[in-house]
Each structure stands twice: as C-alpha cells, then as structure tokens.
Image (cartoon, helix red, strand yellow):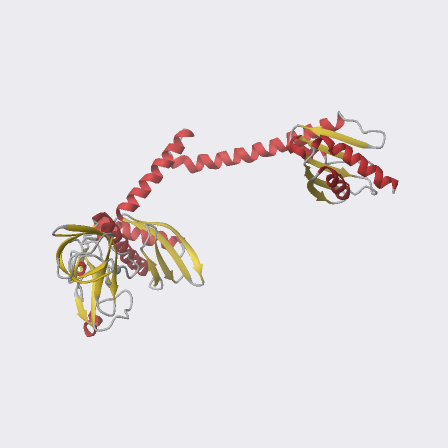
Length: 395
Ligand SMILES: [Zn+2]
C-alpha cells in the first residue's frame, strides 16, 4: 500500500519516498504526493529524481486491490528500494485543486438556493468543468448560486479541514451528499472563522487550503442534458481569470474596430445586424427593379421568347419573375447559372431546362413555371434551349 501524502497536506508537492515495486515503465512508491486519477479529478504529473537519474511522471493511478499508487515514467525506472524525491507539477495540481474546490463550493451554493438541486455527476478533467444537477435550476437560480459563491469567497475566510472519521461519526456532520464509502471516511470541510462548516463532503480528492484560492468561480453556461438533469459548466481559479481576461481583450479589440467600449459591443452588433437586414432588403428591391429594367430592354422574339444574358447570378430570379401569360423567359448568367420561366401551358420549364442541360452538361430542374440550374457549357446553352423547344413543339 502507498501512503497518500496528498490527503494530509494538499499543498505539499515535494516529498521523499522509496520504490516499492516496478512494472514495465511504472513504479509504485511507499508514499506519494502524486494524486492518482479519480473522483472526476485528473492524475498528477511531475518528476521523480534519484541518485544518478530522473524521469518525468506522465500518469498516476491507484490499484484498488493492492492500494499501491503507480507512477508511469517517461524514462527507465529506478530499482526497487531506491530512495527518490518527488516533485508534483505545481501549476497542474493547483488548477485541479481550484476546479475541485470550486465544484464543492458551487454545489453547496446550489443546495443553499434550493435543496432540490442535488449533484448527479461531476467532471473536473477539463478547464470547463461540469456539475450535473437535479431539480431543474432556472437561469435565475444559476446566477443566484454564482453570486452567493462570489460573495462568500470575497467576504469570508473558509479554511480546508480534512478529518477522517468513522462511519458511526458521520451522523455528526452535515454532509451535503450521502456517501457510499464505508468504514473510515475522509471528509472535506470548508470551515468559516466561527468554526461553522460551509460545506462538508466525503471526498478523496485534493483541494485548495483556503476557499478563496479557488476564486474566481464563473458559470459559463447551464444546459438541460436529459430529463431532469441540468449541466452547469464552470471554470475556477487561475485558469478562469486567464480565460476571462482573454475574452475581455478580444472583445475590446473587436469593440475598438466599432469605436465603442466593450460593454456596448452587443448593442453595436445588434444595430449592425439591423443595418445588414435593411441593406439586404434594399439590395433585393434594387435587383428586382434592375431585373424589370433588363426585361423591358430585351423585347420578346417573334415566338414570344425572351432571352436574357446577365453578368450577375443574383439577377437570375428577379428576371424570371412576373412573366406575363404566353411568354417564356430564358436567362443565363456568368458562371453558367441558368433558368427558365414559362407562362405558356404547353412549355414545361423544368423539362425544357433538363432537355437543354442534357446537351450542354450540367444539372438543374424545377416546376412547370420555373426551373433553375447550371450549365457546363454556357456558350451553347441558349442554342440548346432553342433546339429543345423546337423539337417539343414539332412533336
Ligand atoms: Zn472533492
């Protein structure tokens, strides 16, 4: 069995120990400050040093059957019995402790808003941590819990206390969530100056020694994931501050391009969206107007056919609309986009277009009144339509 030093003092990241067992690239130690993955918290990484060698620890896991904690090394492991010094990657561990503490504290705030908001599952293996809650918290509840935690972390000193108690003693503690652990139970308590506990959980993970070290705890979003379960996505500690600072800098840079302060960015973007919608509507009207002008400037031929060659594909639909009875209109634009509109019962626009495209290559089709497509051979399209129309009328 490996003595878990991280249970005594989660901030002590350097230690000495000796190698108990070696298996391939893994070593088990008699004691370790390396936290093995578990309880929604990722494994510690770091470094082991010994006389004449060192190796990086790239993963840590606990063998539940033997109680041994195995350290996966990126180099040749030392022999059994070798004294080592271990150094846990501090930046990684502090991020994990802030996430894990943030999870306990935030879950407690939700329960204080409404006891129905019980934890279903948690995950702290990514910077965006998740807290799955029952009881359907609303957006107002979510903001209330976040505010309660922000005020608590800013105004109270909550200190970590991690007693191990017997199952029988558990009844003396206001556990936030029932535990399945039997026998000796390790408790994680954040306690205020008046000795009153703010949150009590049964947990084997690592946590910050003072709750405020997990600040800021920021809820990014909450979403319903399945019946009766809401996933609250949050960030905690340094990485939350770093992330939000980055978001602010990006927002400010964007806001500067619009000559507004960052807090007026939403308002500015909404105004731009309205302007864009107006401009699109105006452009549509102008294209319709231009389409009518182009149609008027192109008289129908003797068979009542109007042939239009366009330089803008966006004009295709405007020139193919409002066709008067007895007329067939054929349009071709740059790039080979083409269309046919028919107000003559014996001419099926879709079939005519397909017949022409069978000759020139391309794809398209449509209804009896309107058909669109694109031709691979724009130079021969109009002649192909004319030939297809002649053969239809001959039959
Ligand atoms: Zn915990």
